[in-house]
Length: 287
Image 1 (spheres, rainbow, N blue to C red):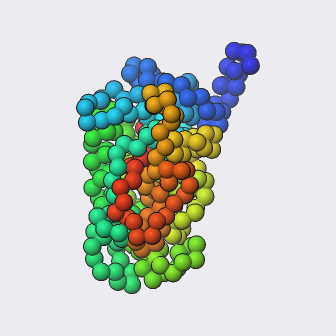
Image 2: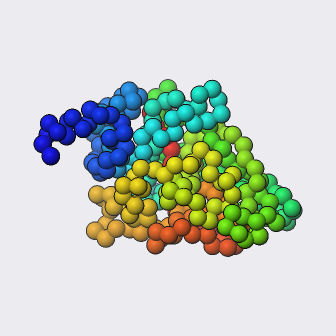
Image 3: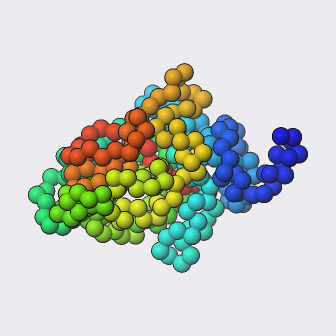
């Protein structure tokens, strides 16, 4: 393809960029601020799915962080207020898990994970230790240092998301087992979340009910174009042999655990293992 032909394709706009995997280091655009102006304009002039930013705020407590462009403008119009999210945005995920943690301190999808189940118990994703504690720590430790220079110069978007907050412990889940399912949701202000099965695989597998999905009802373009990135770190600063890893997803699977991506790349749900240590690989939006 000639340079002219490529330039003509680029002029077709954001849908071309959403459907083209490039995998280029765009840290330079991040450093000089051009990245954010290209996003805010909605033109995404030289941003493609799979392009990445290498973290500038590294210390001895962190591994090298590579932030991947997972999708572009894929949450436009989402939310319960007015016309929903109207800011042009890029959806960002880390190329590798940021850390390992549990969904709950014991093997339950109920709030606090220590209470005796009733017929319907508060909990689910919103009640989990992951939601209440871990994600807040991840935000302040890894994400804000890279994308918020100050309160007035912060590129992390606060969005509205449907979050599950109830589990019916005696309810049949959508894959036919009578061992619990999410049963309610609420709109919440969010800055980051775990991904859903649909975001990763393009469909539900072990998610317990429709409440688990909410606004996360579309597969990210990066996983459509390069499905091996679901469970492998192929970033340029990774080891010669790609690192494979598993990580938590946001959906309740049944009353004792949540969905996850296995290190082998499969959709997984281990009964009674909400306290397992798995990767934390959240998504967030920048403008």
